Amino acid sequence: MPLTDLSLAECLALSPALPEPADLDAFWAKTLAASPPAEPDFRLVDTGLPQVTTYDVTFAGHGGDPVRGWLRLPAGARQPLGCVVEFLGYGRGRGLAHEQLLWSAAGYAHLLMDTRGQGWSAAPGDTPDAGAVGGSVPGFLTRGAGGPAEHYYVRLITDAVRAVDAARAHPAVDPGRVVVTGISQGGGLALAVAALVPGLAGAMPDVPFLCDIRRGSVIAARPPYTEVAEYLRLHRDDAGALLDTLSYVDAAVLAPRATAPSLFSIAMMDDICPPSTCFAAYHRYGGPKDVRVYEYNGHEGGGAHHQRVQLDWLRSLLAS
Image (cartoon, rainbow, N blue to C red; front, top):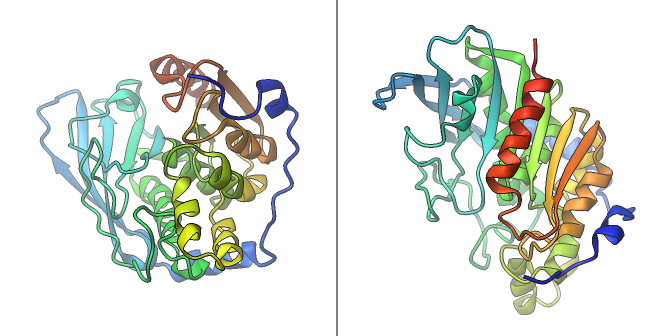
């Protein structure tokens, strides 16, 4: 797989100045204030795995819409626990209750948020997108192109903020030791949450989507960024309005507001989330930051090798 973007040296030297809406902070303050508290409901489920205690979680997301998730706790662990709140990649749902045991096996609480309106790829979901309005091309980047208040990713980022609130509400979780993470779309959500939620212990975005969306829309070879180009191919006069709307949910635009320590992963042969877009978020990130670069990998990034890096980083970060 060849390089499809800038070289590593060029990416390391980037100094991106991204257009930022003048009312960005006011918009997000108003949006989050308008959504009700998470008020999570935790229902114990039998997974057949005696070493993991699992709850089916429902909490109020954007506009009070019910959002689903799984909360997994290592059975018998001393509490309160550090917690990993995880957001999913594009198209994925929360899957089945007995899946995705890495973080609970490592001794952490793990809240996995379902993704509204998704769940057709690899893992099923249980959360509809009740707020969809207006026309779009297939996918989510143009769903709600008329303005930020209507946009899909405003709803999804709000859900992700409330997922952190839900995790902090469980008595087994130490609210001061919550880390957000995710791959691709999940990585972009982790960055947005790190920018919008105070007091997080850390963030681990992997090959993040939703970063420098303007650039991604003109250089990415594969979806989802290509959805923007497909929409504008049909709506030729709407580029300014759509790109302005997308700047409200761009994780690289939001990144300077983040203060929690972070560990990024970026793949230099990624043709889905081009490395220059990920580096835009990395360079603009406001808190302490580290990055692992996988020069010969595509969108799979560091895979299990990077998980081992994350385990070591997280153990050091949350040591008590």
